[in-house]
Length: 511
Image (cartoon, rainbow, N blue to C red; front, side):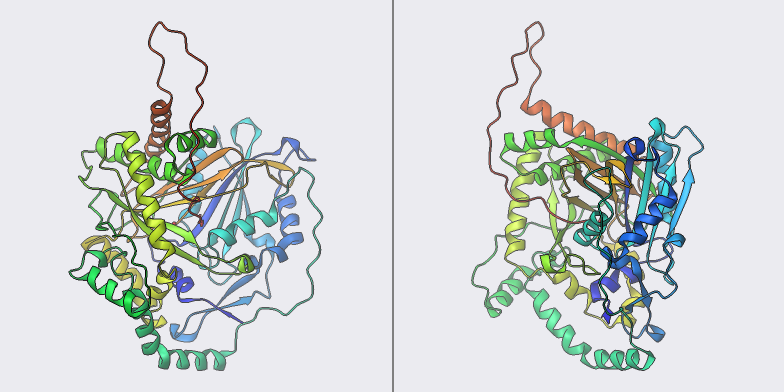
């Protein structure tokens, strides 16, 4: 018996007519090296049937508690059939990036059916160069970044020849309690809710000065410091920056439509810049995002005079729970230096800001996001979440956007014999998190970006992808300035090697 956690349920409650809370990925594949020279729907269905036991989330559906009195449970679908979750489409032409992105955006808009296991795959033919694409989405209540990567790994191989997979071992089925058990659990949790809420408030009070909105409240820093002392935390974290998000065109209520753009940047270039600056790969990724957002806002005369505020998801999942259904994530909230004109200075400040944020995060409870989700009874959060999100987006958005960087394998992978050329992640847009989301995945020598937007807020999402590439060129020029006219270029100079400021921030989920 598995019940959704308060955080898992929050992703369900966040859904509305304008918000679909699933995460997704777009894989671009070359089927030339497969045995058939093609990737077919039948081959994909056969692979999934053979390996379904390696991806537990794909077999489960929701069992809801009457009247929403408690969080739903996971239960195995007795009528489950892989065939009903695999769809196929062929682009009419020309089969280019823009047409593929438009098709994927239309699919991404649609909500998943909650009466079935919460996932879909769409095999897309007709791309230029004989390529095919696979778009897959799973509800965020079922997976986070690490479990999503594990799900993907279950389907992929290291060679064009699919590996042999052991059949599933006999074991108990995941089932939900009966009606009486559900109602009894709901009554018990309702009785205990005030005590749990007080406990959560006490734990959250230690982080008042690091959370968006609350950090700006009068006395927040003093209350947090006093609470940390009471809790026995002897080391005081470094002073937190101001985390009040400025107004931007991409903050405010969003609509139901989506736009998507994607592209890749050589990982070697990112690492060269990181080594030159003594920064981490993630620092460079965050700087690229800050530079692209700055350029986009500057073009519209909407650039704030202070940094934007970004939420950066962080995986806190342990190795023993890598395949567990549900979310084990937290969030770092940090300024990004969109107010700085110099690219080198943006990188320097971003590296220092991320290092300070990581130090604070390392010394603080990682479960504050879950604690926040559990403050109110499930029935109340189910009714109020989407309305609260929309109100917050109008009155005072807590953040400007979510930026995620998901580390991936640096070797080629194969699906049904077709080589994966790139994997572009996609995440969730909500009223409270803004009308644009930037996610990237490092794979086989590239950083593969996926940018999702609401057209009511950011219609020209391809322009943002262009700004990301321009930002990379800008940083490369800073470490390798062009030779003066009329002179012969010298051989490439060696770059000083510096230790990264920290490991890349992990998340998917495809924030």
